Image 1 (cartoon, rainbow, N blue to C red):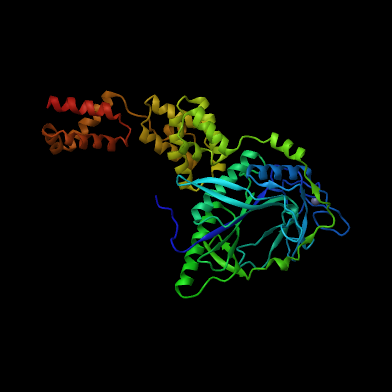
Image 2: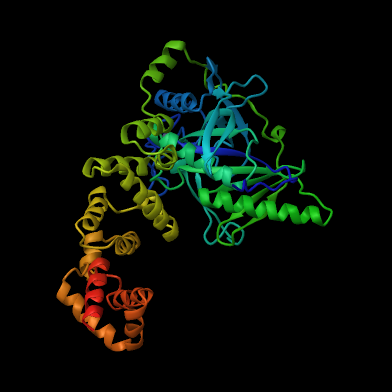
Length: 484
Ligand SMILES: [Zn+2]
């Protein structure tokens, strides 16, 4: 199988993923509601998250626990004492002019260091190392009317300022945009299984990617909002940097912005170096002690993770490991599969239909799995309609595509579009007569050569838009040929 690697280019991709801890009720350092989505701008704020002088942050204990769960799930080693740092920069999304974050140098200790994520890329196993995981506050949300490059002004919403964010930094272990894509899918599946972050919430997982080619400078691509765009942005950067190399140039170290509308990366600024941020320990927060007991307590409450669930799917449902890997790469799909299996006794058939038709149609229509409206009951109803010979398998595929595209239930699609299978022999005989009348030459051929029978069957299918029962059609045609 093609690896998709560009041989000789020595592509190195690392990711910095920001995961919002959306299951928390309050922000990281104050009591303001963290549930800002759909709320009027600048209504969920207080003196602490607005950075008023004289206010003091108070750490949200639950946020540390949720962060610890992610660290444990990524095999990362949790620090026994973590320290918050100030990352200083002046920007409109930051009322204090610094972000309370963590740092792994100058005496800084992040939440955890090391670890790995293992995932499958086109059936091959891949392992990406984690460098560190840190806990920090989300800056305010900026809106650029139009696009970031053309907008003449910026709107700021401080509702998001101070929401708990995990920064997960990988080593530059990925070699293709595909690998980055599948890494992110696996990571999302893990945080969803942990119940600490939900895919349903737009912007709950954001990603910066860094990429270097042939030992050239590292280019950072900022603010990519979807996994598909991570893949596209990286593909674009590889082509751009390859062209630079071909012309004898090289990529310079810089930060580029992914322009979603134009599907290109654009230069934003020459990248700051770490010293520009003047990191120093946050004097308003004491170092946080994390005891063995606390870690074991959190570990004992860990829910089932995608890898364990994959094992269970192969043993409980008897499906192949490949199927189980695909199904558990998304929590909603894994839940959907299990619900379906409760309603229908053939797990392999359910898995096939989910993997080939459901997921393919979802990808093609560009709908996110989180927005998929079809229920397990409706999906199983479709499979039962095939079993009861009300529709053919071929029609069922068409019905499912239509159901996903329009949000109607499969049964409704079948009813609305009159797609029930025609099994009535008399009705089929009538259509066969019409076909015989139209294609007299083919009828004569069919009497001598059985291959021509298939042509006649095909014509009946064409007239009934695939709804005629093929076996009955075949039988009727053969008996009518005998009579001739
Ligand atoms: Zn607040």
